[in-house]
Length: 297
Image 1 (cartoon, rainbow, N blue to C red):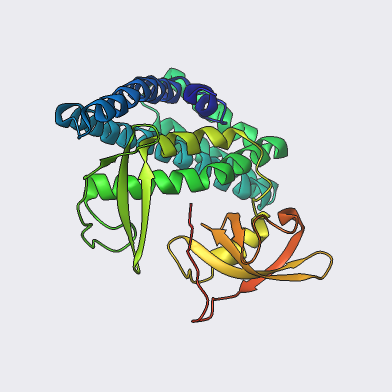
Image 2: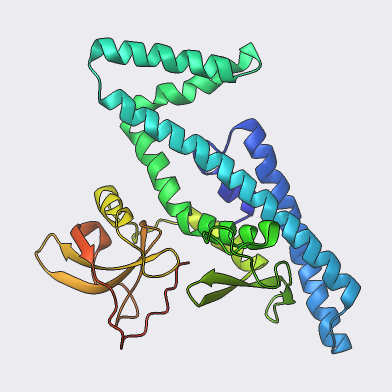
């Protein structure tokens, strides 16, 4: 699927101006794919790095990462605000509810510079009373979590020259990229702290975003997400937990990324249970003699 089609298929991201940004990152993505293919071909023909071409593709790739990060960050901020508003509506009595609605409407009016846009902005918050709409928002947030965290980590290294989520620790060789020999895209090595290192290419980030349009049966139930979020992580973005299923069976060695998605189970190539059937969870840190590769993305 084209990147613009995937992005604009997400709830709230079909808004006119966010949609324009989605179109921009799609156009640059398509342009970069052509440049990446040409860069790889040039490298093969020369049998050495074509410096000028590599510098241009690397520069444009970094700008693309910055753009897609800001688009996703803005979209997720709006989505979370509506989800919080849906929770607010479910709690108070009629009088408190009426006061909360009036206060929220006033806030939207204050934040909106043009009067004609107020009703458009407010329509989204009115829809927060629709459980199907709220469920769609939560699903979109969950499905994009890992892709966003990958973009976030790359952006932190490239833009701020810092190790992500390490309180200002300087990143090594920040901004230095190499040519991916599979597709010609620029790839970066990221230091994640705690002796963890990973590699991301620009094309891998774009492909991860394309996959968010697919159904994902590895997403944890929301109450379980909240439990995992309160636990200490053993690796960058990863909790190793034991889960209890509705049948009473327990599975240890389950790796959960960003408190949201099951990304692996020790000793299994796939997931040997239905994630939706998890009813409880507890920490299950790896023993010192066990190897845990983290795999946060």
